[in-house]
Amino acid sequence: MGGDRRHGRHSRIAAAAAGAVAAALALSLAACGEESSSDANEAAGKYPVKVVTAEFPAKQQLGETTLLRLGVRNTGHKTLPALTVTISVGGKEGRNSMLPFGYRDPQVGLAQPDRPIWALSARYPKANGSTTRAGAETSSPKTFDFGPLKPGATTEAVWKLSAVKAGNYTLFYEIGAGLGGTEKAEAAAGTEAGGSFSTKISDIPPEVEVTDNGEVVEIEGKTDKRR
Picture 1 (cartoon, one colour):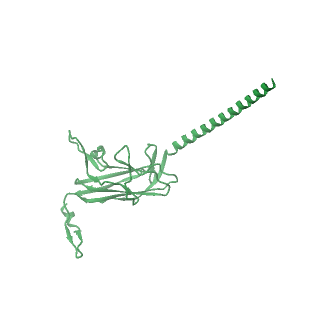
Picture 2 (cartoon, one colour):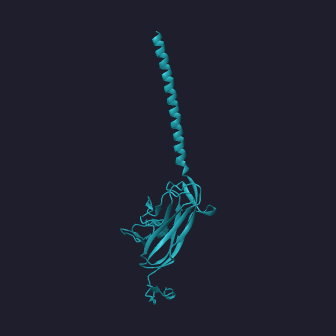
Picture 3 (tube, one colour):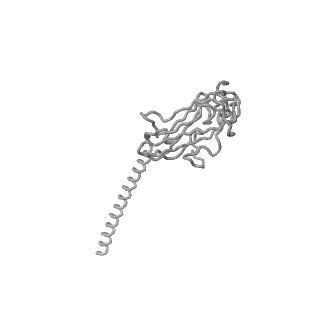
C-alpha cells in the first residue's frame, strides 16, 4: 500500500510537471506567434526616401543608345523591405502597354500590340556600379525590384536604352518601398516619390564634323534648326 501511495504521489507530481511544461510551451508558442505577427506587420507603413539622381537625355535620336539613371536614398530609420521602381510611358497607349519603355498600338487584330519606344539592353538594369544585372522581375513587367535598402544607404540604378521610335514622350517613374501593397515610399512633405522625363526622339541624323584631333562631334545648333 505504501508503495502504491508513493507511486501515486510520484505520478501526480509528474503530471503536474508535465502540465507546467505544456503551459510554458503554449505561452512560448503564443509569444512567438505574436512576434511573427508583429514582424509581418512591421513592413507596413511609410518610408521616407530621396531621389538623389534622375538623369535621362531630353534630346535623342533613332538608334542612339542612352542611359537612364535613378538614385534613391533611404532617409528614414528603418530598412525598406524592397526598393522598387515602376516605369511607364505617359499617355493612354503608354499606360495600357505591358512594356515599361513601350506603348500599345491601338490597331485592331495585332498579334503583338505592345511595341517598344526604347529597347532595353540585355543584363540591365544594373545597380551601384555592379557588372551583373539587378532589378529582379516582379508580377508587373513595369516594376523592378532592387531588394531591401538600409537606412542611409543609396541604390543607383542604370538602364541602358536604345531609341527605336521617333516622337515626343514623357517617361514616368514611381518609387516604391515593397511589393505587398502596404508599404509606401514618400518624398519630402509626404508626397509620392517619383518623377518624369520629357524626351524628344528625332529621326533626323545630326550634322557632325571632325575636329583637329580626329574626334567626331555634333555641330551645335544646326540639328535643332532642322527639327
